[in-house]
Length: 311
Image (cartoon, rainbow, N blue to C red; front, side, top):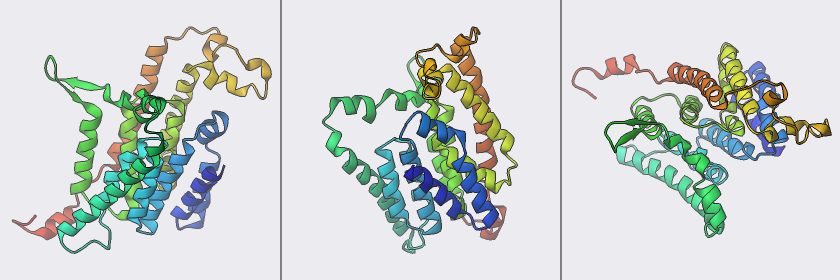
């Protein structure tokens, strides 16, 4: 509950106009994805999500990059996804950087180092546990993003997720945006991860704060995109084990516990793999549009000001 309210407070503080503050707070507090993952499933994904939003807030509103990196490292000790944001965070120039380029790189290395060190320190007490190493440190769910490949020979393939992730990092390095738009890069990275991963129901919570920010900043223009994401997510939930859908309502109606899944209960025969593939395809199309929409554009004015022969 505290982390849930914490995210709502941070989103409220993220905006300047009172109407936007209230809209962001309301959208978060009543979003069904958080209600499902946190209060119905009882998952703790809201904790690393809060720490990620806190990191964005500290960097954007306070320019506390090292502290933001610390919270990302702490978040990664719960779920590994905040690690994906360390490089985008480090690529933003701290106003306290030294004037030389070497100074900027020192700052960037410090930011990544603080995140990694925080993560290592927090997992050290559990590192000798075989169960932790097998189910948390290198869990099968976290490696599914490596399944999508592009074969280029009999025994060699390009792994699509790390390839595109590194490509995006390079784009972030060479194409600068304002610090206040840091959330956009985090949003793009997490969507990229979802595109190449079998999405578990609670994982969408990681991107939900960014969906809220997008809705507010677009003056709700993107509501059809969010609706499509929600419908595909709801469809995916219905295809999981009934313990993640029907049984969750057993506190209201105890007879539901132990019942069959939604589609089987309705007498509908569903090809699970094909239906999941259709839903994932629809979800990916929306995620790809978001990435296209927020993809960093070249600043023509900046190029023009450099003049010929300058870089």
